[in-house]
Image 1 (cartoon, rainbow, N blue to C red):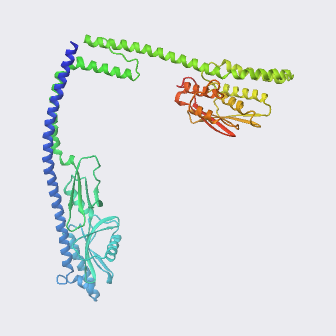
Image 2 (cartoon, rainbow, N blue to C red; image 1 turned 180 degrees about the horizontal axis):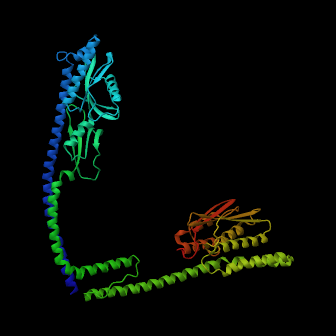
Image 3 (cartoon, rainbow, N blue to C red; image 1 turned 90 degrees about the horizontal axis):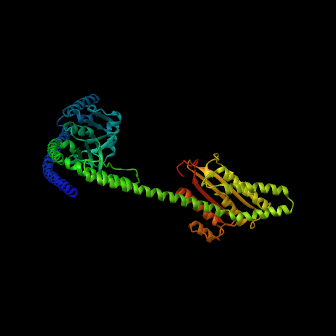
Length: 555
C-alpha cells in the first residue's frame, strides 16, 4: 500500500513538473519573440532620435560656420575689416561696438548656447558676444584660454570643430583666420549633452567619446551586470561620437506589464495544480522530507533528534519508530566508545607519567648515603626535604593538568637536588613572566627537559647553564622555553624526535617522546613543540593553550 501511494505521488509530481515546464517553455518562446520585436523597434526609434538630434546640431554648427564667415567679409559689413586696418580711433571703437552687436545677435539666434569672439593680436583687441547660458566660473580664464589656444594651435582652415579644455570645462571651438585677426565661437560640450538629456528624459548616460576615451559626460555609465542598451552616433563637424546608455528597464517598461500578466496567468495555473496535489503531498512527501532532514541532522552529529511516532499514517509511524530505535542504539554505542577512549587516554597518561620517574630514584638514594657517610648532616637534611617535596609532587600527581606554581616548584626542587650532586657545575635559572600561577599545565612538562639537559651535558661542559623561560603569547597561549649550553642532540635522535618516531625503551631521550605524546593526548593539534640544537646551544620551545581551569573548553 505504501509503495503504491509513493508511486502515485511520484507520478503526480512528475505530471506537475511536465505541465509547468511545457507552460514555461511556451511563455519563454513567446516572450523571446516579443522581446526581440520590441527591442528591435525601440532600438531603431532611439537610434533615429539620436541621429535626428545629431543632425540638428550638425546643421547648427554648419550655420555658425557660415555666419562667422559672413560677418568677417567686408562686402557684408565693414566692422571686422575696420577693426583690423582702420587707423581712425573713433572708427575703430565704433566698429568694435557694432561688431559685438553682430556677434550678440548670432548668439541670440542660437539661444545663447554659444559664445562668439573676435581676436586681433596685433591690435591687442579681444571682444566676445556675451556670457553663456551656463555661465563659466572664470570668464577671464576662458578668454585667456581661447587666446592661448589660437596662438599656440597651428590650425589649417577647416569646417570641423576642435575640442579644447579650459578652466575646468569642456568646449568645442571653431575659428577662422581672416586678415590679421581671428573670428570664432565656442560651444560648451555639456550644453549639447544637456539638450539631449532634456529632450530624452530616459537617458542614464550621454558622453562625447573618441574611441574608448571619454571627453565630456553627463551621468555615469551603467554598471556591469545591469541590462542596458548602448548607442553611438558619429558627427560630421566634430571629431567625436556621441555615446548613450539607457537601461532596458526604461526602454521596455511597457513590455514588463505584458510579461507580468503572462506570468500571473502561469502562476495561477500552477497554484491550481498544486492545490489539487496538496492532500497527497501532505500524507507522503512531507513525512519523507522530515525523515530525510532528521537523518541528515543525525549524520552531522545532532544525536538527540527524534521523529514523531504518532502520525496520520501507520506506515509513516512505523518508519519513524524504526528511526528512533536506531538513533537510541547508535547513541548508546557512541557513549560506550567515548568512555573506552577516555579510559585508554587516562591509562596511557598514567603509564607515561610513571615511565618518566624510575631512573632518578637510585641516584638520590646513593647521594644521601654518600653525604651521610661524610657526616654532612645539614646537607642530608636539606637534600631529604627537597627530595621529599619533589617525590611528593611526582607521586601524588594523578591529574592530567596541575597548577603552574607546582610545576615551577618541582623544577626548582629538582635543580637544587642536582646542584647538590654536582657542586659548582650547574646553574639553573627560571624566569617566569606569567602572573597567574594557577593556570594549568601538564605535570613534568618542564622538569623533563631540565632533566634531559643535565643528564646529557653535566659532565661534558665546565659549567652547565640551564635557563627556563615562561611567558604568555596573546590571550590564548603559554610559551615554555628551556635552553642550555650543552653539546646538543645527536642528529639521529633529533631526526627521530622531529619526525615523531618513537624512541625505544632503551633510548636516552624517551622522556621527550613521552612528553610529546602527552601533549597530543591532552591538547590535540592546539599544542606545538620544536627543538633547535647545535653544539653549545640547544633550545626547546613548547606552546600550549593558556588554560585557567578544566572548564576552559580544553579538558
